[in-house]
Length: 111
Image (tube, one colour):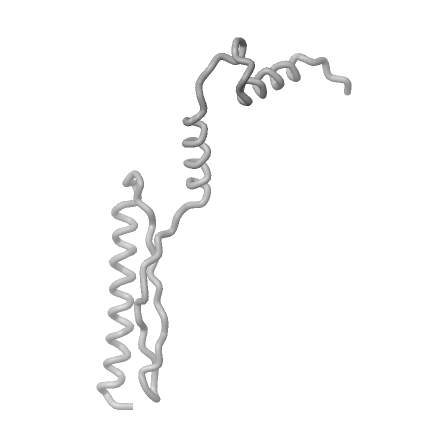
């Protein structure tokens, strides 16, 4: 292995690590920013000849929190429902479900 091959392999590793550290610092700096999504780096090892491998950065992933996404969907879908009074409304499902729950809570327990 020549010195230039060794330096080339080392430099590719350092460049990939530098890119990863830049993403980590960005994630830390923006941790409290509303709407910021954590990012991760995709790295892959590639052959660079007979003696070693290079490291290549092939992309950046946005890491979405599945729990927060589910909460967002729930909250935004609930916001689209009409607001009405369950005591006077007899047409919508939400009011019917509220009346059924209320009636069940008033029923005496049998157990």
